[in-house]
Image 1: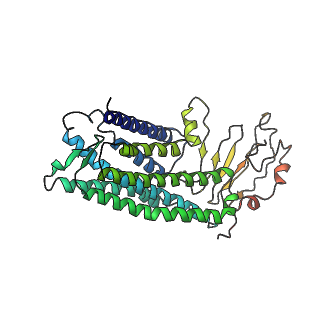
Image 2: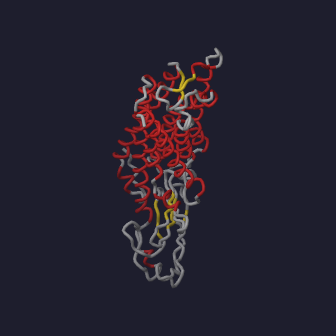
Image 3: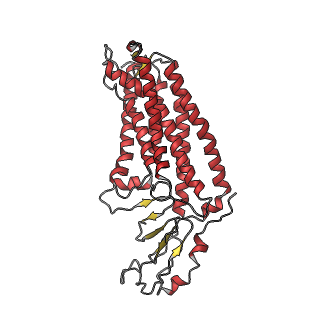
Length: 381
């Protein structure tokens, strides 16, 4: 087996692995009721799936003695120039969505996210994607320059023997990175300076903020690396391993976003559903906690939008939940930030405001006021 053939096989296997991983990430979010994600998340994951698919169109035809069908080769050429800006702008728009959620914590009166704004952030990357495709088409068809569409020297994919698409693609990616990187730095500084605000959120919400921030940084690093390698591969399309970076980078992104607990739990369909909603991914509310613990406790999610919740008594005789609470006060509790109040009287280190087997509702009445526990510090730096 020649080294060139081995590289082609490795390239194809990596492409297929990336496609499978993104399908495994998207399918639970689409079909499982316990997984909640925003439209921006779906847009970003679909963008990376499209990125992976675009490099797999020539599988089985890369080393044929004759050129692949012109239509197939042209279609892949359109995609390989359009998908790098797609994922770059998609990452930027998703990060803007995250930044706006973080910024909402600076206000005592966070508002429900505008659907039009969320929709625009989700659709913007695809508009850029279509514009790049149109640009490549204008380079090929008006002057009948179909001869420019050719299989690359490394046999991995088809491309265009013209420098203009490379320059346009590079300009879009650079513009996205120029906005994204300073915004990420500023968000990190803001989260650090206002950490007292995040400490007053529930543990789940706080972890979601941190993990999503780290995942988005990983996406940015991946986009920068993809840009650097794409420029090298397009300028020097030699049959080497440089282009293996294309299908390899989506694998890291798929692991970053596809290994979240609720997605993994969704694959265990034979087990009882354990919803794990989050402040960042739930598109219906700015900040909402909806956690079903695995040790038998139930939670009540309280939104930042001044919703009122009432404690519900546990069924009598339930050994896990303790005696029934027959006289629970029905005074509504209004919170200004997100929290999760466990209504089952059991103790666990991850569940605040829980007492062990209270004998009556008097125990709950003796707890500190909810406002004093859950309200975040309003002195934003």
